[in-house]
Length: 264
Ligand code: MF3
Ligand code: CO
Ligand code: CO
Image 1: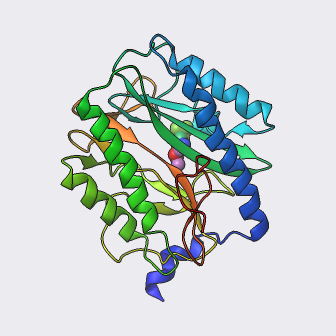
Image 2: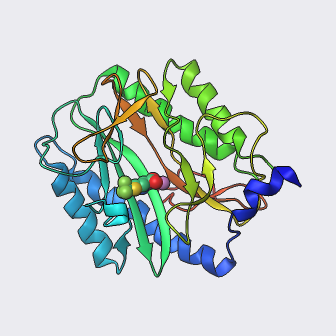
């Protein structure tokens, strides 16, 4: 069947693989909690990276980003107008900053991938709204993760919600299948068309990670480091990411260490 073609490369994980990916995902989620109390004015993003890296390594895991296509650090930390792939460095956090920390772990060969937003001191109402809408975009995408649904409905619903709130959705970076490798099929666009793309089936595991911009949706990559993606207009960007297992019933959010999503 033609419409299944794209889905044919999607790995259906075995119960054993699922349990391995679940453990790695929990570790990635826990890392985001471990670093939270260190997010303060004056702290460098390099220091936050160090806290995450030590926790991951102490738990017999590896950070998947380190050395990935030459990426130099164990996390991505994206501050203010950085959309994604911010490289931790000497930047000292300031009052009013918003930032995303993105952690991908490899535990016993299995990958878990998650990210969330943090705030420094007092942030503007506008910035807080952007964060809240981004969190809700992930939740809305996750609602579409049921067996038999088509992948395009995830991005369709996310884009509809974000734009109705006056924000734009990044289309240059996507969610992705994950678990056995870092980036697998399917690609999860956060700006997509209704009832298009692969059919979701139990045992599929992928991320949803919408990047929501306060202004224009376009990004530009830093010429010097080749990684840092910033908004084209310098306005704020926010992102949340979870690793999601499609089941026979409701989606199982493997990186949800805070119990934000129902389990049954
Ligand atoms: N963790 C990111 C994602 O959500 C990927 C980072 S790749 C890196 O897919 F090389 F930039 F680290
Ligand atoms: Co990801
Ligand atoms: Co990630």
